[in-house]
Length: 276
Image (cartoon, rainbow, N blue to C red):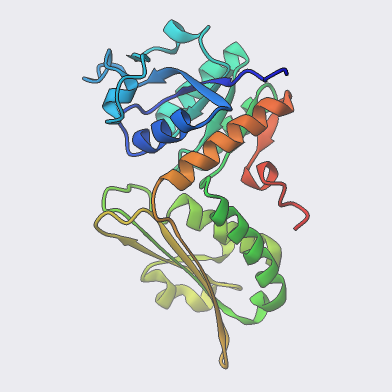
């Protein structure tokens, strides 16, 4: 019987918060094979074994700091780093016609335009959150906004570990964009952040409030409240570990490899939730 060969992947951000989850998922999967591991130039882990860095034993994959060194070793790159590094990897992938999975958050609008432009030439899955549960939640938010959104006060509360830099989280912003788009508004015309909500609320046609918590080692928690006078609807997702994000990204890599075409996709496409 013919067995399809595993997809050869490279993963950037060696030694970061997502590294151990990625290594666990990759070593348990028969659909992908880790063939390259990357870190930033000058990193002290350059030259170390990718598995040993994650504490799971040797994998025989040595961490490199330059994509050129491993350019023939992989077919798709998974990147969860930071905006500047991600755009550098994206530029390389665009030049060499290599597909990429981007889970980095904190991009500004100009940087997002660069991602959009690259998608005309290569395949990209770009998502603020690769958790299957979060992406199902986005569809629930869309449906909830259609039914109760116009008449409800809407608040988005998110919590992450104290080292997370961007605030609100990219996931929270995606939730806000999903709701505002469903209601026929731009998020930039609706969003009110922190204490500003009490000062500027009356100046916004349809306010969507954002509250941010940065504390301890919280992996990721998001709650959206639709509140009326007589009742309120709360939809919450809590990530118990970063394995949820790693599993989603690997799933996306397998899906994108099967598409064999350029374009910009997200986890709604990967999970076939468009018609839900």
